[in-house]
Image 1: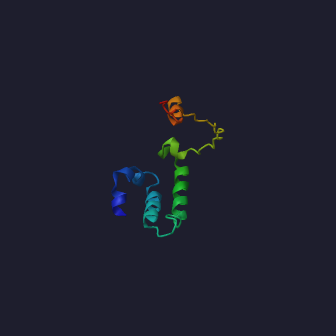
Image 2: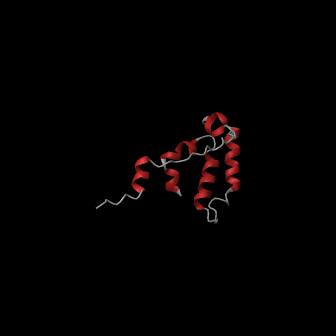
Image 3: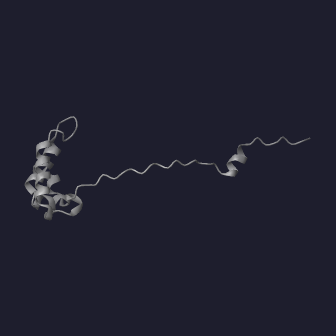
Length: 98
């Protein structure tokens, strides 16, 4: 767990405004023994989320903004046609006349 915390990829989070909350949530997740990994870490993650919402200027906007639920556009159905050469190659060839 300490090696994971020493990774430069999480250094900014560890040293930021919510470093303590991040470290607690991250360590809890790494050490989780629950069948659904991390499901026993609800409280540390809620504390981290609360801290992030309380310090919006300390994080990029893509982290602090609530994601807008986008309406799914209807899936357009496409019909796939095989190429002409494929159709022709599947036709039985006429037997040569002798």
